[in-house]
Length: 143
Figure 1: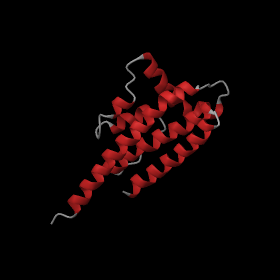
Figure 2: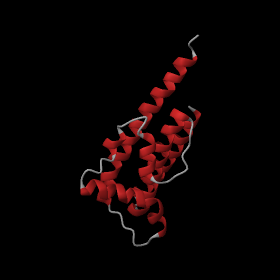
Figure 3: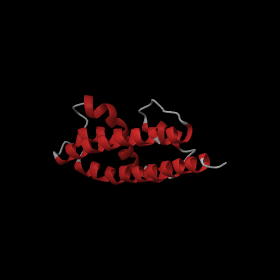
Figure 4: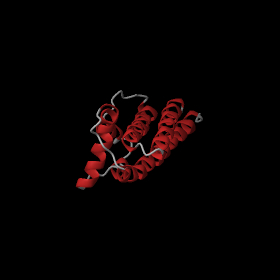
């Protein structure tokens, strides 16, 4: 629960920074914070299930590492159309590009398309992690 809360608090913090950047129409930099929200949420899942914290920033790899615990993540970032693939790649690249590449441009429409995905990921992460923590609590009370 402590690991989950730590990652969740980091995700919440980055979401607050995202909201500030979004309100000031700094869409390119706001994608960096969205990336960080997604990264912390994805890292929470294996921490809760196997007590392992991945060090990678690669969202594709982190999603793969979470698949043994939930397949619902494929619904968040389906990547089954060129537009879905473009949005995922935009978010993936934001970790570096939004901070260091002045030619990296993200539009309000891009952010508006990514926000519901990130919120859905948050809901999925919260549900599966809280369910697992509840199961640990139940098992620890058994004789």
